[in-house]
Length: 213
Image (cartoon, rainbow, N blue to C red; front, side):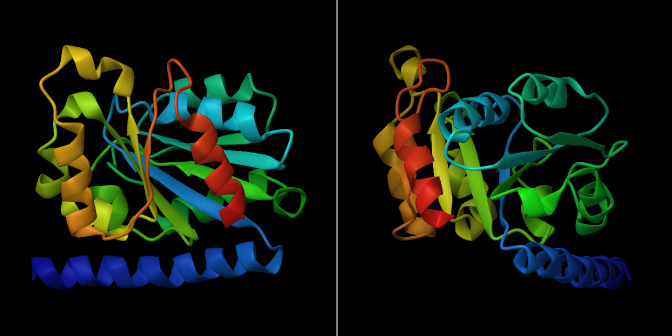
């Protein structure tokens, strides 16, 4: 019975995701879904990405959080359209939540819409939002065992951002092992080694994102 309920939920979500995708495609809008655990640095990466791209692309952001508007408040300071989704306890965004948020943004005026999902390595990847690309953010301080422990997010992502590389000297983590494990799950996936704090590696990530647009 539990499996049947899960299948029904995901089936309904897929229908709504397809409707979202059709809206995006109608206005030639590229949409990415940024996922990662709490504290991986998703919002800081997003802020730095906005700074690098806002003169090249028309950007919009949907921020997902369980309760607060703290992340949306940060993004608003960068002068781009942003709207907040509070899930009220759910550990992920779903297509219905995104559909309700879309009227808050003028999609026809955007080139790239970035959705920052709720901090979680498991649930967000299971729910299609209608996005074109999933992006995984993993901080190196989370440990080099994480890719093999949570393979689905890396298997379904189109790129991986390994954040906080400036902290490698202070933690017992093998960056090479981490990358090898990611590539064993998703061969050929682009991996960007970055420090959102110092800006290291972020230009390569931003340039890649422009090519996807």
